[in-house]
Length: 355
Image (cartoon, rainbow, N blue to C red):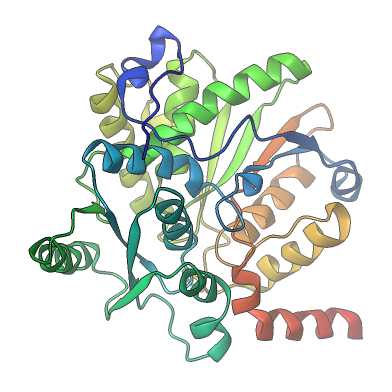
């Protein structure tokens, strides 16, 4: 198990160089144009950041976050990772993959966030991949009790420690140092370099906003590096008012970790929640249509929980934007969840084909 801290970042990012980080993917994720979708929307020029290609058992944004969580775990000589997430969580699937890559075990606590007994949801998608990775699964009955879920994970950790293990917990609730968000401070630095290389002037970035780590990390990184690019967070877990407080607190937590002042103001935190209903993990018709459109225009595989809702918001915003505007979608992955939702997707496809 190795920890890498050798990357050099600008002084504007404070002590980012000195925070333990285990590299889990190589190189930069590409920024690609979406010409067919741009023509379809007849508005802004559209681009995509392909963070679905980061690796770790089908990839996704959590690889960037895990580089810092697992970096700290390695620094503590941990041999077991513990994490909580929804039954179809991308984070827990990728945490199990990252743990295996580093020779660690993984215990996953599944929250009951989505009220369904669908066998596909319960057994396929991320659940199947986590089982293939050899993760030990636990359950927690309340999907809206983050503090309680962390408390139960601490109890499991104590049992493992008593058995001679060295566990490391990736916390769920706010109030902990947002190490994972540092992965998207790094991504902001990466993106600004790519925009310069491509001579691309992006005015707005669209990203799903759930735990808030990806959204807050990007926003904090851009502002710390002097960029005024707008970051629009698309709510997938809670409404805009509640999410705003979470993003603000995460930005303050990042500032504390990096030992610098936050340059994020309240006016910088922009959220839309029109595509949230009927709630977390339950897709609406616009989300399902966005998934189909992404596949049939640009060959992108989106999921019904995060990227489908964010993509639907981008389509709506792009259509009303000027053709001189460049807009970028952050593809945060989640493709295994498609198979967990195959019934509702098949029904939507049949409905579209009928017309």
